[in-house]
Image (cartoon, rainbow, N blue to C red; front, side):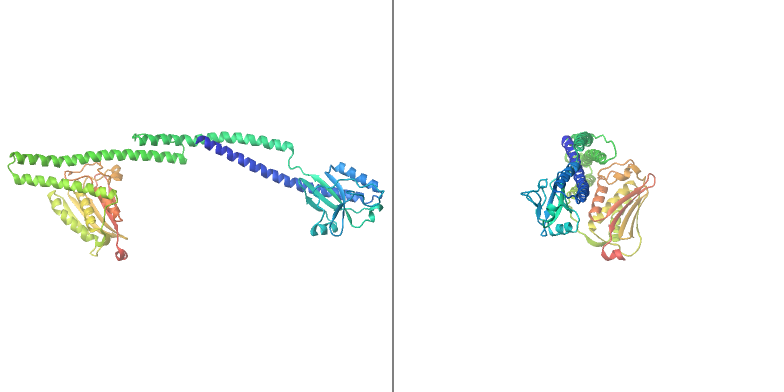
Length: 476
């Protein structure tokens, strides 16, 4: 890639030089042609004016020869233009005038047409010069008013044709152009190689880092320098590696926590079941209650895992309906009242207004979210948990507040992560699976809402679930 990039940059620079050079050549050629046209026109008009008073044919021919040599013309020719615009070179193919008179010297000018067009003939007849573009030659035809008796009797109008070759660029300029092209090509090749290395080097470093990550080394990082797009890409690769490493740690923690949560009730169930079998247990009713309680813990854990798996796979089905958020929340709080009383916590439900707060959501899942939030609050609360329902703009709000130890600010971004263990431990943890808040977030998002948390150490915490109001309720 580095070689291809350097070659492409050098080729681009060379193409730019060639295009600029062609533009310079074309512009120089146009300027040289324009300048040559002006010079030839002035010289031809001057020669025609000086030759107008020549009386002898031989003197006229010598003047033309001397003028051609003096001005270094490519050709200098006298022609006869008749009334129809036909151009006949004088002295070409036979003599014009007296038989014994010498021919007027000068070859036929290449590029001179044998017939003038209507516009060209009109220009010539009014006395203005006529310019022709030959192949690298500028040709100018001007009227020639001669008084030589040998030519005066010929019908038509005499004209003087002067031709001069146009050199677009001198050899020295061409040499400079070639040398400058080589210098630019060399400089572009060097700059292209350096730039290609500057671009490819960090890409190769990131390639090695991603290969290491793919091989399982999640601690691999790429060195980032500068503040350009490549640096942003390097930072993205490092951020990805950090997130993958964190995700792997969470997965390990998840497996360890699930293993612990499964082992505890299974050990209890197995121990008490063995006691019943070998007859060492004396109170079968109490043991049956303990086994049933542990089985319920297992059932809840398995159900939470199934819910998360379905949410991750987008296979979780909701059955939305227009329901009163206040009614569902009040019912869920009532179901948690016995548990709160058993833990010595005052669980209160506060409703902002008597009007219904209608939302379009799955009532069972709303109840599950509220239950999980209240259950989490009961684990941390010192003496009170307050559940409130209110309308805020176009959303219905369910808030759950506790007077517990609060949440460390460093833990706030990760509260809803699976099995995340915060710095402040709850007072009661024996009945939690560690997945409740994760399910709260996923279910709320699935119903088109959001969930937020605020809290500082020693100030308690506040969770809020926001659900959009349904239809007409949003306009009330």
